[in-house]
Image (cartoon, rainbow, N blue to C red; front, top):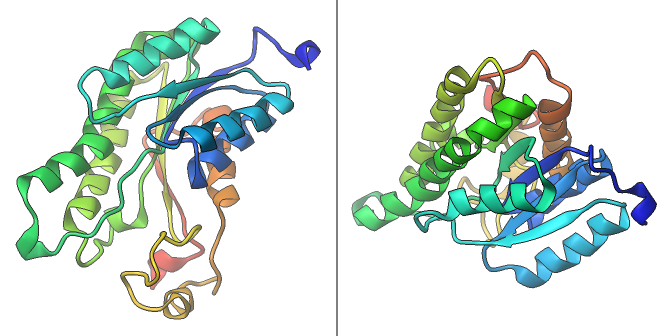
Length: 249
């Protein structure tokens, strides 16, 4: 396996990478020849299993544990990534919190939690990595949500904080250009939430309001992220919707 390793491989930091969409993104980037700084918060066993799979592809993987809501964590993750690989070429901010909040019951702590993970963390990751990403002519991709543009009833702090992440994407594209490209990907239904009932009704009803009449899968998001990081040299400040045509309903 060691013969496949290359010091010239791009290093990508992926937050919230241990499970679900984050794991698929990490796998696609590794398959494309990238080394992965794989961040997780609690899912250590899943992260270790994924790391073994990526190393089997001939890639270098560094496991990074941390709570992005803690002050200093974004800066530490960037520094540990650079220390491990000698470089940092890109960031995928996939870490997210999806949680309902009835309007009358929303408290300040709910806002702080959502803003912390969806706005503050990606900002401070970009700030900490800016010099290195400029040097490498790197890229950043944020994972947003279609609910950033069409707020989900009962998920007000979530929807608004994801909208703020879209705005941050565009602002960072201005701040970090021309050397660094910054884009985001807004998934529709690619993986059902880990609850019994979607917030918008039955799964069948949701898919019926989608042009392609079917759910996507995490690979649809991962391929788009890979394109934005590695191929889309003239795209910056864009929020790419990957929803099977759900936004037109």
